[in-house]
Amino acid sequence: MKISHKIVFVLFQLFSGVFKLFGLRATRLAARFLGTFCYYFIPIRKKVVFENLEIAFPQKSRQELKIIARRTYQNILTTFFELIYFPYTTRNEMKLLLSEANMNEAEMLLKENKGLVFWTGHFGSWEVGAASAAIHLGKPFNVLAKKQSNAVMNELLVRAREVHGNKMIWLGASVRHLIEVLKNGGIVGVVGDQRGPADSPRVSFFGKPTPFYTGTATIISRTNCNAIFGVVVRQNDGNYKCEFEKLEVETLPIDPKEKVKEINQRYANFLEKNIRQYPDQYFWMHKIWKY
Figure 1: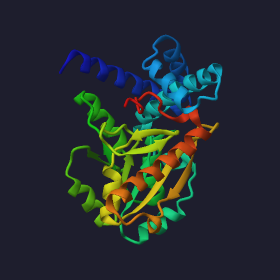
Figure 2: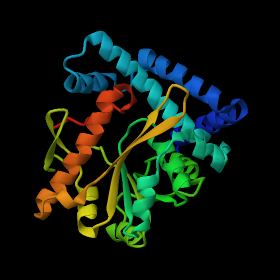
Figure 3: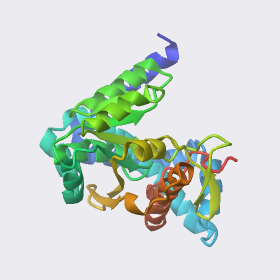
């Protein structure tokens, strides 16, 4: 094991033990404090954050952007610390974190037995969303994820994410596996706002042509499964509410390429709408507008 991997393992276990001792409320307070500390003193990707915010919100003042950026760091640390805390929650405690969860439409779509794609972004707590929504629905999420280069860290994250029954599907795995899950009426969870390759079809995102991966849209198009766009919004009390929007497949273009592009555009529209309402809950650290 590499020295750096050992250090990460020790820190993860240390934080985990402290969080277990002091509880979720203290864990969130620690995340806010460390998020603020990182913003001022360990400004990882701070330049990228401001570049993205200036593109997305050209009308906002520098002071407004600073507030959003600081809260973004707090939100990211809160999301990560909550994930570390997952193993110390009961299923009922995890369920109650999603205090406003109207799952009626999702339940109806699942009854059609066509499979369901839950398509979210790096917004609010996508981790709580997958774990809690699965418990509400009584059906595990098969979550598409990228393996960490640090094998030890990867194993620790998998344990936390799967503690209440969800399963990880690694990027690069056979598409056939995903299709099989959907054909069996299962749920696939996707965090799909990563920047696509330079030659990917562009969609409009905050008024700027943006390359998004087309894989999820292609699977939806080919399998005729149901799909829901969703985000989990952090509330002032620390709990979460859901914002959902069903993908209306009846109004999609017939041409396969145009159909995939339109699905991606609707996803981008949904994500942008919610980011505009809660800008500090988005993960502004990735270079979404690199190309």
